[in-house]
Length: 255
Image 1 (cartoon, rainbow, N blue to C red):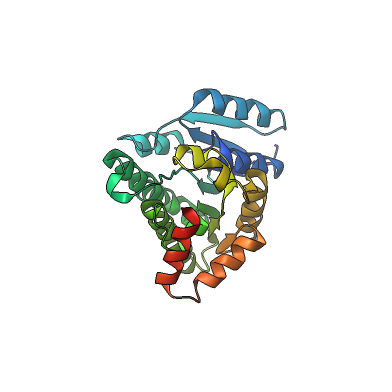
Image 2 (cartoon, helix red, strand yellow):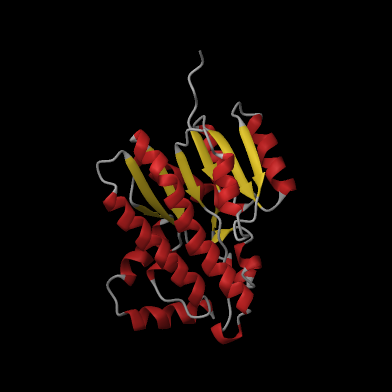
């Protein structure tokens, strides 16, 4: 009987970092369940990765809709899950007082509530088996208040804090939690966040490099990884300076 391959769930897998993480996991021989809102893009990724010899299933799902997590959990019934990639999320830029209320609600819901509740639903599976790895995609914005990205940065600060706390809780259980903190990355994030794409991408990393570093940290069981030397230095420095200074510097940079 053939040995069963590890099985990974990747949310937000239809583009950007999520797609590249799926590609990276496939190089390690993992079977995949990919979720996202675009059926066409998910199908393209699935066909590509199936050509590499892994089994890939897709589930078109907007995780912000009522009942979405129930549907996802039902889809996973009876399956051994080895890796959870909480990548689904988005940002929005601009003055907070002018942000569309629906965007603010959806950002908080997807970036915080969905990630937290999905982790809570699936974590007992890992604990029962005494093995599992979770990757939560945060951001370098998690390390500092970010004027004009106030809500997004705050949600990612939550993801980082939640991930590091959970990693400590789970010591000795065989289950690891890793926070992936990329800086500017060449994806559709800036476009979707209504940002100046040229300014945003000037020093941006590629999504495949972010994914490689993230998956490597995941498999090593690291608590957190900041991708890129410059980003890591910036994240370190924000811990040493007053938060008001960090907020002013971030505001000047984002403007």
